[in-house]
Length: 391
Image (cartoon, rainbow, N blue to C red; front, side):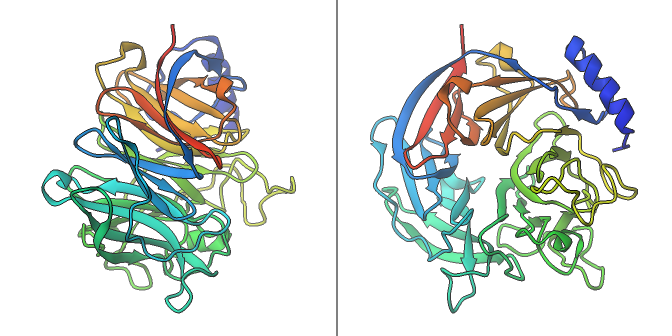
């Protein structure tokens, strides 16, 4: 993706605010200073979830839900919310750590396999820092009450986090390969170090080993799992159904949340390139500018961070007004963001915000097989909510 100057970005933003016309090509775009608001209908399906983090739809329309403190639940329209599913490993549930994402195997209907990510310390002390992101594979029992044959298939090495920036999202592509986002554990320089797995997106075979054709598999001093690097804390990932490209988003520091279109071997800049500042208001020490040579500029960024989490494309016939959309949750700004894409599904041409009346942090968002949008709210009494367009 070719970068553009900051002046040009502001020109694009001015035009963007005036009209909602499509942009041509992969154009880097800043979010509007104030996005439009939109009405939505909501139905609470489950509550009393303690800081739910992710959900995964199963073929029968039911949902697996992770709770960050270390619980996994099953919800269905017939039986409601289950008791905690047994069989999870010990994990590090402090700060931003705990039980994180979950995804069903592409052949779940035949094998009942699920993959889940979580933070965990060293083997001798798994509940204590330093910790890193791990992925486990397990079989969900036929009665949905326990995990069987649980095995760890991937570990973020080295383990460096004291409780921040774990990532992590899991997505299977159409070849059955598993993409995983990994935060830089709040250790900024590690995102540029190809010898470690901090600040990376990795591509794995279903058994957790490096996928064939990864860009650094033959490079000395680089991890063979790495697909892209220079990421900060990516908590959203989805496959674009119109281009089949992997899109991710990540938290900036103070400003600079961004959406990226992944390319094999590409450097997405953190901490060398960023639109954000340190939380103190000072510049990021390693930053060389908003755009830096040999790094990829984001497709879209927010000068003021909504604190984004969860991500899914809308490609379902149920609601015509939501066609060609990308939905993202916002934690700090407590909204569901709907980004309108152009007719080719390549560029973002408008943004609107839904669910602001809920006053709730949106942690995850998924499009259900029925065409409704489902969100999880991040709270001690978190909820699973079904969303449809308003009147």
